[in-house]
Length: 163
Image (tube, rainbow, N blue to C red; front, top):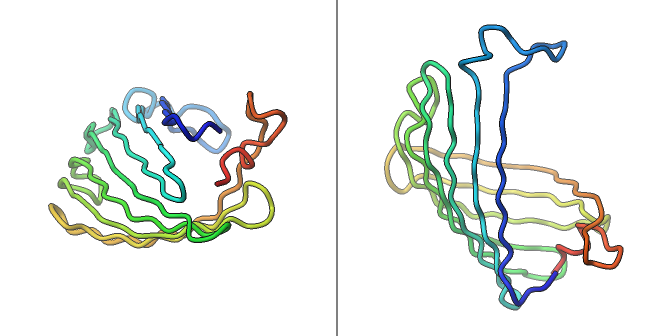
């Protein structure tokens, strides 16, 4: 990965509600579509990294609203396997059928541990609101990435993303 230039990402997702057999639920066909359109950019500066972006989620369902969101993250590679970060994230109100009935701005801190197995990492974060609706959360996740990345001479995507 060329760390001299920022990395940009754009992603569009369209979700439909399906039953256990994988068929679209008849009542959900028109109401439960969810489209996310985030745009993010990442720039590495030595052992530091900055990541920011925004998006808009479109929800067509009774009791929910479409809403914008955005965030900014600063990350520090502590050693070869551990990253520490702090993030500011905000979202608009998501509707009365959700837990996020009002807008909120949150600050969170977390760690990412990169295991020896390429592409395997453990994430841990805690965050709480500093403005708007009161929110608290703890996040624990195990991630696995795989695949080949064009232009990295056969390196996996996980190898290309290592510091």
